[in-house]
Length: 232
Ligand code: ADP
Ligand code: ADP
Image (cartoon, rainbow, N blue to C red; front, top):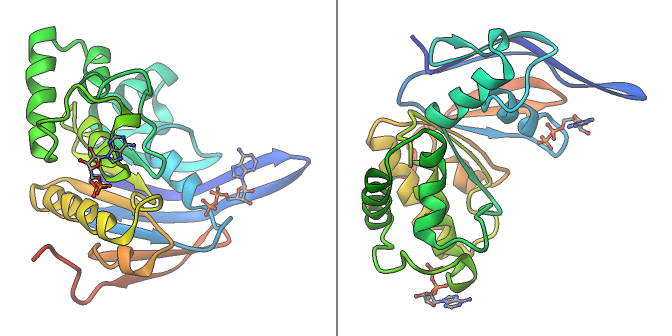
């Protein structure tokens, strides 16, 4: 069973003239695969991520995440699926500014009703895992960009999701810091997570095993990366 299956999906936005953001897209992500999505602005990358991330539903077609047909779920069930099975990492980190690193990581576990002691224990372990064991009490504005992105990766992992979705994870980072963050994603890949990453940066995309090129709402081509970048 695939981690994600997108079947002949169309997404039409109706604001005056209809816009076909996705116009017949089908793809499968195998369990444990690492895939990049590239394409010019407006090609449908964010729309595709939002559908796979259960943030939105298609106009036509089906989106199946971990065997569940997202189009058949109520919005409450979608929220639940999103919280337990998908981790999001954004370009802008999206951390809560008033909360410490530890508190930010704990948040998704509150929604899943994990006990307080287990939440705190797990947040501590996750901070260690991303190399921030000594920053638990720091707020986002007391952390560097790279450290903020590490916190947001730890938060994405809070409920141990099989699927990680990330949109330009290194977009706000210098290249050296970005390379460190990409190493973390490679570690997640080696640990068995399925990763889908949107990027317009070819060097970043080449960390994945496969690149899907979107153009005007359709898959223009799929490319296998010959020798994906891996940590040394
Ligand atoms: P990308 O992420 O590749 O830049 P998007 O998926 O954001 O592309 O957008 C694809 C197309 O859908 C664009 O033409 C965009 O203007 C349109 N679009 C995206 N989101 C909305 C929305 N919420 N309402 C109306 N049109 C939208
Ligand atoms: P990284 O390579 O992870 O982005 P930097 O080299 O940017 O880290 O940061 C080095 C150190 O400076 C870090 O230990 C971080 O705690 C500290 N630092 C960076 N930015 C800030 C800030 N805005 N406020 C307080 N400390 C900061």
